[in-house]
Length: 88
Image (tube, rainbow, N blue to C red; front, side, top):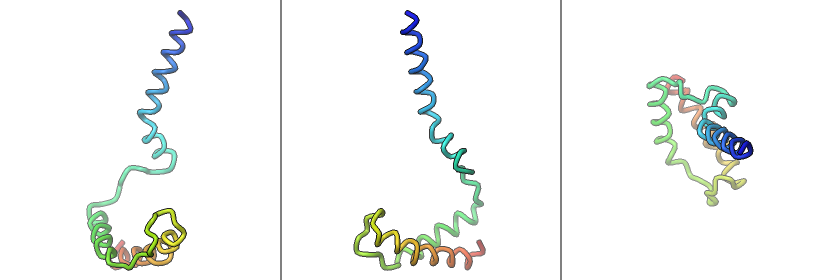
């Protein structure tokens, strides 16, 4: 009987932890909640739409080396420049 209660308590504990796992990870990694202003959200959306026209590498798999290089060398600097133009 005692073993059944222990198993039940461990099960409830695991379910509880899995339910709040994302919040715990966000807290651990820093401010995971979006505290940016509406103006910044609007600027990010506009920059995203503006940068969609950039030529992408042939291999569009997000984990591929070509895509990672493109994100770091082309898209990232272009996005930062766009956000600077928007005032952020």
